[in-house]
Amino acid sequence: MKKLFVLLTVAGMLTFGLNTAVLADEPVQEAETEEVADVDQEPEVDPADVMDQELAPEVDEDQTFHYVLKEQFMEGGPMFMSIILLCLIIGLGLCVERIIYLNLAHTNTTKLLNKVEDALKTGGVDAAKEVCRNTRGPVASIYYQGLDRYNEGMEVVEKSIVSYGSVLMGRLEMNLTWISLFIAIAPMLGFMGTVIGMIGAFDAIARAGDISPTIVADGIKVALLTTVFGLIVAVILQIFYNYIVSKVDSMVNTMEDATISFMDILIKYKK
Image (cartoon, rainbow, N blue to C red):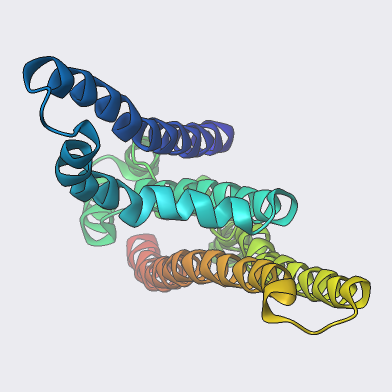
């Protein structure tokens, strides 16, 4: 499942790049077509003037986001910018996988608890286990582990619930360390590109023997672009990371409350 979401994310980014290239080429093709039409119909009108008047707004519109983003990406240096983009793609893939997993793991604990209590009253432990077996989510799994050891005593049930709850908490927090790793790596790569860009700028000054803005402009621009893109990637992944952590904490609190209520029902049924 995780590999599927990562592959979908990579495909989306590649499609975005292809669309950018197509949008960048469209104004040129339209310019050639309209130039030929204008020459045939109205020879006395300058085709260059018609092209400038009709196509200038369209070219500016296409360059506002896609073209400018692609241009800035290439000017930042393919080496570091590609690694930063890879961090964004993999990080987003892991974030999407965690969000979908947590949404699928969500359970209405109040409704499940009522079903388990009704099953205990009408069909006993076996009926309650069947209800938990047919319900998706970590809470139902914890209930099933407790019911499976119901005949061994309440102490064994409590230990089993606590141990299995720790295992499920680990599953909920899976891949969070990798997401945090990409959050830390992205700005580091940007800063590394900054350092290398500044080194290139100073090398250009040394070769020219003169400090001129035109000499150091390219190196400084590369340095700043890598830093900006690295920070943007870190900010995007940090937002998703905080959302996932808050969702995990909420689910853990729900699991603990549901477990306490479940133990109360078992104690009452035991009596």
